[in-house]
Structures are given as structure tokens and as C-alpha cells.
Length: 470
Image 1 (cartoon, rainbow, N blue to C red):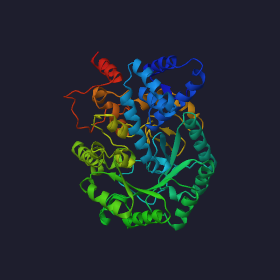
Image 2: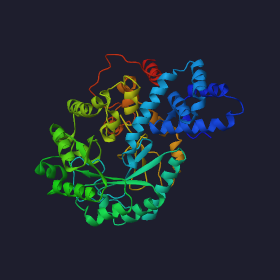
Image 3: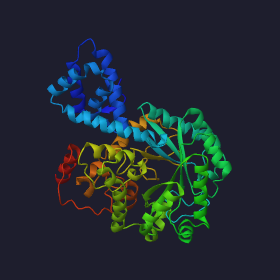
Image 4: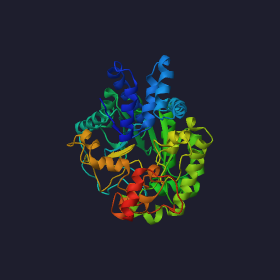
């Protein structure tokens, strides 16, 4: 039984491959190949099974004694078998490096920002989640119901959720331990983001006891005074450092959540160094124009030149690493959420290293659940929503046309629609694009790229360009 969707051409090719096999073997071999291909697709966080998934999947299950015969059969169909054998080797090496990371970072997972509370003990200028007014919270039972709904829907597609306790400041929710315990009992992946103020020894022990995957600790400047100004709280950098130390003490994987904005764009190298010195993996993301961040956009917002500076920083630490052949040791968070994205992979090795996580992550590896159960396509609140996880079956959400349109980046409009980088970039941050243009599918307004040169583009982009020109 097929769980994931297939590209039409790939499905036709699969039929031809099966015809090459002895008729008596087909009923037993067919489901094994489908399962192997789906696993390969999930390993790269793919939406549709492609030719590479099928061919590499076949070689995952085929006995060595039949390998030479299979190579002949595939070659007779015009398939570049040597290329796919090399690709399989690349993917297998990269998979080993993924296994060294915590469960929550594996490709195929969708991370959910779980807005369990509006309460917060800081007042950050760049907060995109704060709705200014404290709203009623869902009960423990309701959040457990949402978690079960989401995870059940994803598992039917062979995927998993990583539930990231968000806010506000999630440590201020009194029953968070009960919600964590529910995830532990169900063996569901969960994580947390905190500013560190209320993150004490008792709390970190509770996280450890409930098998938390990882913890993000937020800070935004190496200068204590500036960090306090940005976050609206005294000694905020000390609290962040203390939280990181507690995570390390109890053996919990810890990342630094650093929002890049106008105030710190000139210290990102220093922030990376400080985070690594403290023993925390740095994760950088650009400020998103939403809620309080929108109110203070004149102070915190990035312009085109500053977005490019951030891109060049990530390029230096991520893409150049890949091009030097060191993709297997590349931390996930240096690729994750890299947007806008202006690279065209030059070979299978580069493609394999980046395809799962660059560009806009909406409905791909990042979504959100609002304080009232609203399903957001991205990790931040948006006007465009996908229903409510308290009442809508999440499997049906995943199969909805709107979800697929967002995931597959097929409805992007304006300049981004005809850009040859759309496949990997996704048209920039959808949350910021929606806030400024009023349309979730509108073009990202802070992109510096000009469509004054050509690359190969896929059929979807050709159709979009034809529609625009027609």
C-alpha cells in the first residue's frame, strides 16, 4: 500500500521495472520496494517519491546475488545506474551523520511551534509571537488531544512531529510537566525554547526525566547591556548562559536561538563564537515581520543589504562546507531555514546535503499550533490558516489542496514565481511576505536577487512563467 504520493513519471517507470522482474516474485517484491522508496523519500524530507528514491530503494533491499541482473534490467530502461549507486553511497554516508544528532532534527520530521501560553517574563522587541493581550489557555487534556491528532496524522504518512513548547515563555505554564509526560509515555518527540529566566535545576530535571529531545535557549547579543535592551529584561544574557550550562550538566542537546535583526547583524560571527564557547550549537534565523516585531520594524527589521549579509554568513559556514565535501559533518541547523536561498546544486552530493531543509519551511519541516488550536502553515502566526487541531482531523489537513500548494511552492506569485531559485528557496519567508503584501503566496519583498541570468528550471516553474506571461 502506498502511503506517500508519487511523481507520475516515476510511477510509470516503476511499472516498467516490475515488468522486468519474474512474475512470481512481483507480489512480494512490489510492497518491499514501495516501502524502501518511501523511506528514501522521507530521509530527504521529500513531498513526492521520485526516480532516485525508487532506484536507491531497490538497491537497499535487493540481495547481492541478483544485483548484476538488476543492473542490466535498469540499464535496458535507460536508467543511469552508476549515478544512482553513487547517490546511494552519498545518502548512506549522510544518514550516518544524521544518526549522531538528536531524534528531533531528522529529515522527515515536521517541527511544530506549540503556542501553549502567551505569558512571558521578557518583552523582546523582535517577538513575532506576542499578541499583546494574554489570551485564555487550552487545558492539559486539550493539548494532549491536539498532540495525538497531529502525530497520528503524520504517522499515517510515515512521518513524525517534533513538538516545540513555545510561547510566550513555556516554562511559565504550570502544567507543562504533564504535557511533557504525555509525550514521554507515547514516545513522541518534544523540545522547548526558553529565555532561561525560569529555567532552573528543578525544571531541567523534569525535562530530562521526560526524555526531551533538545532545548533552544534564546539570546541576541554578546553585549549584556544590548541584550537587555533587546529583550526588555535585566541580566538576560546571564540567564541564557545559566540555562545552557544546566542543559549540558544534564546531558540535554542544546541550541542557541539567535534572531538576526538590525541591532545584531554586525555581530553574528561573534555570536556564533560565544555560543560555541558556551557549548551550545548556534541556530540563526532572521527576524520575522509579525506582531510586536512589526510594531518595532523600524528598529529591528532587516533591509535587502542586511538580508544578504546574513545569507553570506550562512553561505560561508554551510554551503562552502558542502562544496568542500564535508556535508556529512554539517550541523543541521546551519542549513535549516536558510532563506532566501540562491544556490543551484552542482551535483548529487550537494543536492543531497541541502534539499531537505533550505528555503521556506512552511508545510515542509515547520508549522505552528496557536494558543486556541489554530493550525498555522509556518512556525509563526499567519492570517492564512489550515483549520483547528482541536476539531479538524490532521490527516485530512495533510491531504488538503491548500496544504499541498504551500508545501509544493506552486502558488507563489510575482517576481518569485519566475525565479530559477524557487525550487529550493520557496520564495523567501512566507510570514513576512504575507504581512507586507497581504498575500501568503506573495513575493518576498527583501530579496536582492535579479532574474537577469538563466538556470535550468523544472516543469512547475515553466508552467508558472507561462501563466504570468500569458
